[in-house]
Figure 1 (cartoon, rainbow over the protein chains, first blue to last red):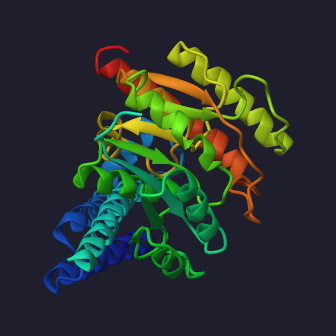
Figure 2 (figure 1 turned 180 degrees about the vertical axis):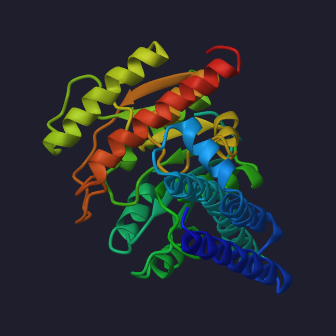
Length: 113
Length: 241
């Protein structure tokens, strides 16, 4: 990895980690969601400073250019987090449905009394 | 018809302001004192006010949830208010109230837990529907018949009567309320409910827009497949059918 690539990757990961921690501190991001993002920031950081690990993983999964490993895991992470959100949206939809049904039934009862 | 048992007629309605008054009036011809519940599914055409003026019970959802969720709201209402039987019918006038009695009789006399109004049973009437929908309907009727082990001619029918056991079950989270259809029949069969089809006549829907238009049929087929598949998988996990 070129020194410039390395520096860039390290800066990005540190920036990402700082932003996430700050969002959690200001209660803009729930802890529940932060861990996945933090993990990705830390992973990028480790892979950026520890080139041999990156090369070893790349070698293991059969990539030719080690930096592709970074992109590959970036993609895998994005897919996972999207899936996580889909699950979350499904459960939220279900909760909203129940609330709406409950509200409508209670409103009808309130009108009757 | 058994005396002393309470039944509720549930009509989920989304933008049916034009059809509700005549439908209610028609039902009243057969059942002058029946409890009718209109579940207004977040309509924008004043369905709620029209329904309230029709001397029926009205539940109004705060926003549009979709047919299945609106229907389920009705089941939940029936459950909490101590009804013994439920009849469900569409708000577009497609289902003829003349057949409510024959559907109800089947469940009240305990011949079945669910009575399905079928437009294809017996001497078939000429019922106009699109080619795609016709193929889908035949297709799912074959699948539903195979899986349930009994002949189901009209699995997409929303004209049904059921007893309290069934609508308690439908009020729970197991009910696939985002798009209930043939999969509900299969699910119900898996849970051991007795299903009986009754011949009914259906009329042309007065609504302008069909539920089965545009890309909907493709989504419908896909969703039905998936839903039936997971129903079977869940059934297996529960320890067989």
